[in-house]
Image (tube, rainbow, N blue to C red):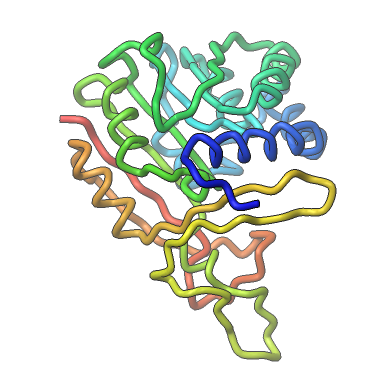
Length: 252
């Protein structure tokens, strides 16, 4: 049954990620060990956001929709004062276990990033970070951007690396056949998605311009936007369209 309200869609996605959390956590075990042992995870695995997270010792960093918690853990290992937010209770539970495993202290909050709770203070963080698979779970981009803008201090930066919406629109590409699209780039109807042995989820489609304009409307100054190709991505995307994009914005 298709969910009819924002609350129903959020709850559906929570159930989806609570069910996927442990499998996701197990798959990332080797990366957690690297972070624990001091391997420069951000520089090696996140080359686009890594340069913005080079000198963060003592900086207050909020990681939004932290998911597998790898960026969260890597920032804490660099000495940042890290708060992580995710709406999945299971992701939060496993992130606590991961932080202990990696020998870092982090603050974890179970909440919807579209509406960060008032317990997270205004104008507090130096950096807000989010990466890979963020905006497809966000129904209200404006609320997400405004919430993030609220908790950043003046001069603070939002740093996002996410899947490019064009790559989400395409079917799996093979060299011996033309590229095809599974949906229009302009089709923004929410879609109910189903995976075997996992509760269904609802995904949302946003154009690059939607994301940039939402940031501007929230009060951000856009510092940089990049569109780029990552050959190692699991998704089979041809090299003539981007797999990912980077957004860096400042609170002024």
